[in-house]
Structures are given as C-alpha cells and as structure tokens.
Image (cartoon, rainbow, N blue to C red; front, side):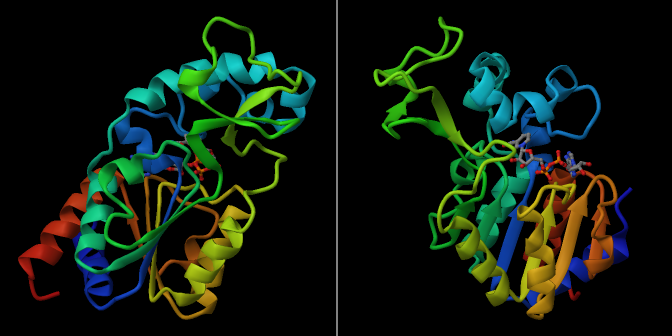
Amino acid sequence: MIDEDKLFEAALIIKNSNYIVVFSGAGISTESGIDDFRSPGGLWERYDPNIYASYQYFLQDPSLFWKMHKEVEDLVGTAEPNQSHLTIAELERMGKVKAVITQNIDMLHQKAGSGKNGAKIYQLHGEYGKLHCIKCNMEFKYDEIDTKNVEYPVCECSGYIKPKVILFGESLPHGVLEGAMNECTNADCLIVVGSSLLVSPANFMPSIAKQYGAKLIFINRENTIMDDLADVFLKGSAGEIFTQLLKIIKLNIKV
Ligand code: NAD
C-alpha cells in the first residue's frame, strides 16, 4: 500500500519544480521484464555480476561475459517501456523533466520518448545497441557481426569485441559523468528511481543535487543506503507510484 500523504507531498514538489532531473537504476526496468542486480530469483543469481559483468574477467576470458550477455540481449532486445518510463517522458512533455541520468543500458527511456522534447539523456554505463573493439576501437552494430554462433566475437585486428556498456572496473564514457553531475547542480528536484545506490560514481548524484538545493524524491521497493537524503521516500512498485503521481498532477488536485 503506497502512503497517500507521501504521494501528495511528492506531487506537490513536482508541481512546484521546473527543472526536474531523473536518476534511474535497474529497478525501473524490472516491470519491463529486465532483472535488476539485487532482487532475488533473476538472471543475476545464475550470473554473479562481480564475475560476469567485470572488465577484469572480460580481459581474461570474454566467453564468460558473452555467455551472460546472450541472455541479456534477448531480454533487452524485446523489452518495452513501462509506466515509469512513460510517465517520465510525459513529465518532459509537460516541461518539468529537463534531464534523465540513467545507470541502465536498456534504452527504455528513449523508447518511451524521453529526449524528444529537449531533455538530455546521460547513459552513465553506456548503451546496448553498439559494440566496439577494445583494441582498435572500431565500432560495430549488432547486425554487422555474429554474436550468436561464436563463443565470443573477435575483431579483424584480433582485439575482443564488446558492447559499449560499462563493466565493473571500467571508466565511464568521457564527459558523461561530468554532464550528469552538472545537471544535478541545476536541478530543483531529483527523482531517484529503482536504484540501490550502491554503484559508484553514479551514486554521487543524490548528494550533489541535495548540496545544490534540490528536493529529493526516492521511489524504490526497498530502503537504500542514502535514504536520509530523501525529502520524500515512496516505497513500492515504481510503475504504480508513477501512475498515481501523474494522476494527481494531471487532475490538478489541490496538493
Ligand atoms: P540495483 O539492482 O542495485 O538495485 C535496484 C533497486 O531497485 C533495488 O533496490 C530494488 O529493490 C529496486 N526495485 C526493483 N524493482 C523495482 C520496482 N519495480 N519498483 C521500485 N523499485 C524497484 O540497480 P542499480 O542501483 O541500477 O545498480 C546496478 C547496476 O546494474 C547499474 O550499474 C546498472 O548499470 C546495471 N544494470 C542495468 C540493467 C538495465 O539496463 N536494465 C539491469 C541490471 C543491471
């Protein structure tokens, strides 16, 4: 059961804000069928991310990463945005959301329409859809190379080919972190959704926004390690919470 008073409190913050920045994590996409890292029973119980999503392990043996990635490819390739992604795009159309900072590589914000009305999208951990050779840096699209019938794809130069997603131990794409941090300094409201806030440096965003005066709304199924930063913590399913929030804002109920 979502706390109604807190829903109205969050709706009021959104109504009074004109530069909302959204910071999303894997939890926003679980309702689209893509497992997050922490919830029990998913893909990641079979593939420990500390091994299968580690750059160090990738360099030693790329077949580990590719074994896991083939399953992720199937999930991400067919996933559709859910009510959370759609509401964030709607809030952008309403002139509220100015930037989306995401830790996700699934491109569901873009599929939902985010970025079409001027908001900037910062994909801190890269994106699904493009690949590159880690040796010569040549870029590929998925339909240009065979990723299905080989243990792992190799470039003509003999370098390993890897999707342009950031693995644990890898640097973030140049300029993206700086751009995202800058957005947090401009925000009058930061909505943090579906993140355990355990991954650095992505998890710097809430404290930067807070330091620069933004109101913070957290939407998550469980507590996070940074709950004390939140002005409002909405506990529950993000899809349901965003649906309720949008209803309150659109009905223009006196909040
Ligand atoms: P996380 O897995 O550490 O935490 C997800 C959080 O979301 C958890 O606290 C969980 O309780 C919550 N959650 C799950 N489903 C929810 C829902 N429907 N509504 C509300 N809350 C929900 O995720 P993270 O903090 O993003 O860090 C994990 C790393 O994994 C990131 O670096 C990200 O790049 C990567 N990752 C991305 C994807 C993706 O692209 N969809 C999927 C898995 C992992």
